[in-house]
Amino acid sequence: MRNALPAEASRADPARPAIGQPDPAHLARRLREMIAAGRVHAARPLLGALRRMAPASAEMSDMEARLLLREGRIPEALAELDAGLARENGSVVLRLSRADARMQAHDVAGAAADAADAVILAPDNAQAKAVLGAILLEMNRPADARPCLREAVAAEPRNGAFVRAYAIALERTNDADAASTILDVGIGHAPGDVGLRTAAIMVAMRQRDFTRAADLAEAARCDGVADACVFGLRGHALSSLGRHEEAGSAYAEALKLAPEDPYVRHLVIAAGLLPEASRAPSAYLETVFDGYAERFEAHLISLHYRVPGLLRAALLEHCPALAHGAPAGPLLDLGCGTGLMAVVLSDLNVGPLTGVDLSDRMLGEARAKALYGTLVHADLEAFLAQNAIAWPLVLAADVFCYFGVLDEALAAVHARLQPGGMLMFTLEETDPDDDRPWRLGRQGRFAHGMAYVRDAAARAGFAIRAARREVLRSEAGADVTGMLFVLERVRHDG
Image: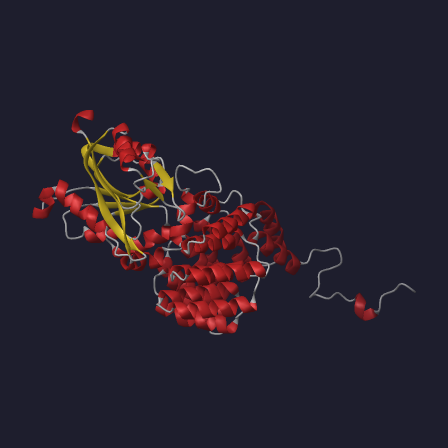
C-alpha cells in the first residue's frame, strides 16, 4: 500500500508519546514556567493532569512543593518534600527545594543543613553552592559564604543572581573594592541585567562615592537600561553631590517609568517636582533601610551619631531613680533599626524592650544583639493602632524625621501611653529663617520648626517637659543641629 508506514516506523517507540497524546516532558516545562510566573490557578490543574500521566518522582515532588509555596501553604510543601526525600534521599533537587521551604518557614538552620547536604551530594553543582552561600549570608556569616559563592560564580559567571550574592559577601567582609570589581565583570557579561547595575550603584552609594554611583547610573542609561530604580539612584547620587538640577531630571525620568512606585515618588517629591507629601511612604522606608541595614551602624559611627546617647541622658534626667538601679519599663522603641538604643540602655534596669521597625533586615541586625524581648515588623502608626499595651516609656530616635505632619503620629503615641508616661524623641530642625512648619529635604527626610512641634505636642494632649536644641551628628565636617523633646501624658487626663 502506498500510504503504509515502514515496518520500523510502525512499531511503537516507548520513549515518545503516541500521536495526539500530551508529552509529559513538555507539560512539566510549561508547569515550571507557570509556577515561576505565579500563575497558580492555571498551574494547579496542569499539575493534576501531569500526576495522572507520570509516576511519582523527585521532579514531581519538587513541582508540587513549589506550587504549594506559591499558594502560601508552607507546612504542606514541607510535608511533600519530606515524603519525597523519604523515597529519594539522595535527590539534590529536593534538598534545595526544602532549603527554600525551610527559609520561608524561618528555619534557617534547617535550610542551611539541606543546602550543605546538596553540596556534599553534588560538589560540582553551582546552584547548590549559591543557595548555601545565600543562606550563610542570611545567617550573617559572610566569610563562610564567600568561598561557596566564589565557586558558584566561577562555574556560572553569567548568572546575575550568583554575582550579586557574591558581591554582598565581599562587601560584608569589608572588601567593597572587590565587590565593585566582580559586579563590573558581571555587567560586562550581562549588560542588560538591571539587578547587577543597581547592585553596583548601591555599593558605590554605601561607600559614599556618589560620583562613581552617578557615573554607573549614567553608563546604564547610555547602554539602554531604562529602569526607574537606576534613574532614581542616579538622582539620589547627584543630589548628594549638590547637582540638584540634574538630580531633578533623573527623578523625572524615574517617575515616567514608575509613576506609582513609592520610593521613586518620595524622592521626586523631595526634589520639589511634585507637591509635598505629609510623610515618607512605608514602602519607601522599607526599601531604603533593607538595603542599608548591614552598613547602618558603621555609617552612623562615621557621622559621630549622638542620638542614642542623647535619649539615654534624657531618660536618666527624667527618671533619675534609674541611675541608682531602680527598674523602669516596659519600654517601646519605635523605629528601633539595628538596636542601637537597646545597646546604650543595656546597663540600666530598663525593660522588657519592644522594638518596632519597617525593615526586616534592620530587625535582623537588632535580633542578633539579643537585647529585645520582642521585635515587631510593622509601620509604627499601624502598630500603635493595633497594640493594646499602655506603655510608661516610648522612645523614637530619628523616626519622626520621616513624617511631615506630626499630629497623627503624636496622637497615636499619646493614646498608647500610661497617664504619666513619657515620649522622648529627636527631630531635624528647619533653618531659622524658614517659617514653614516643616519641609522635606532632598535626602528624603523632613525637618521641623520648634514652634510647630510644640504646638503639635499640645494638640495631641502632651505636656512638654523638655524641648532643646542638640547636635545630632556631623556631615561634611559640620555639626547637624536638631531638637530633642520629652513629652508627658499628664496624669489627670485618664
